[in-house]
Image 1: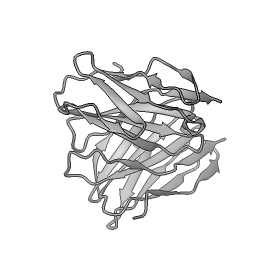
Image 2: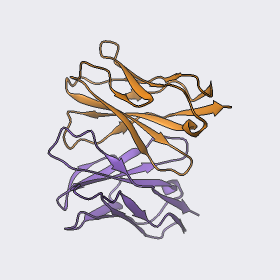
Image 3: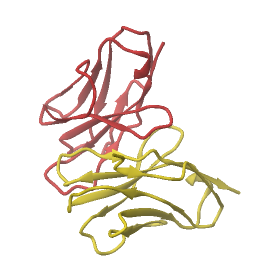
Image 4: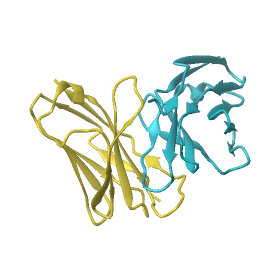
Length: 115
Length: 114
């Protein structure tokens, strides 16, 4: 069964606008971590933001925020004030029972920012 | 503080050959994981090393093997290459023992199998 689902293969956003990238997850663990990574065409996976399952506040990092809805098992990434350099693939990932378990990734969403 | 580095950046091999990919972990990180990312897909976990021992493995055949060295650098070896092994291979490092949200990836090695 798919553990991480990203339903938007591609998204377009106007420069300076906000955009939400969707991510839903599936786990029976109570303790888990959710991650978002950005992957430009160069290939490197750039860590953006992290949300722990017990964190009561939504995580924020600069222009990135994570809209965490635990009951719905969703962890959407919100990018405010989009910039041309935000054009990239975005991956949602989960680590169950934080420790030495691996990251499980979704298939990604390609974001294109239009001037 | 140096980040995760990988070598080579690109590699072309033919079917049946063997390949070794290298990764230097970020300073202070003792856990290294390898992921395979096929075109248009998310990364898939291959295996993980902690203190020179493999301590987790994904659904990959035994011809995918690895090593971790005392300085925490790592190698991924693939024997008997197949066309489907063409992918971006990503190495990631982190410090274990924390409820760590820090897992940093290297720039990847693009392997093409002809």
